[in-house]
Image 1 (cartoon, rainbow, N blue to C red):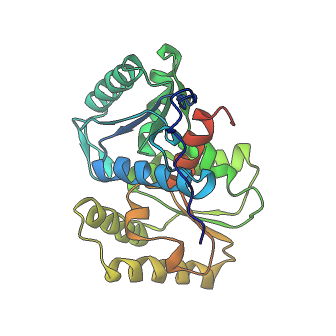
Image 2: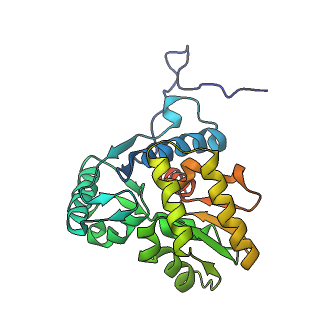
Length: 254
């Protein structure tokens, strides 16, 4: 197999040195921190696989800012006032640190995006909108996400109102509780085959009741415990979608 060659340096002192042309990416993490690291990893893999990145300058400058939020507990928000205050301040700080394109490693926090977006110079990539676009050719969508994201109905509303999809399935309470347990296990880094089996049984139930064309992992912890390798149905990861969109936006391709 031919390996990509590094091209940043040359033995010829007169040869030009490669310069960084991509925008600075900012990733806001903290709800929880493993999600931000996972999106960073997905972003690097995407650059390697699609753009054959080898040299340091094949990668963008990026800032992974982990900001624990007061009042945010695992799968729900206990103190919305504190969460909003910390989120707004963190986004402004990331903007002031020089980020030109920002992604948020938490679906639930997108509900607060309108509180700060107008005050930022950086372009914010909306994970919810971008992930929904991945379902363009699919009709019957099963949504797996945290309790707080389910209650906000952000994905369901966008799929139905903007994408004009009427066959969107959200979780019954007993299954929501099980998914939240998988999310908590991922946050504690204790995910196992047992948790994959839980997700598979939930999918099997909904397949027995309705047609399911795709499963959407709309919690940034779920891709830590479950992936496309675990099912034959299309499994769309919001993490991977955000990572890829951040790269394309940094390259001015999006």
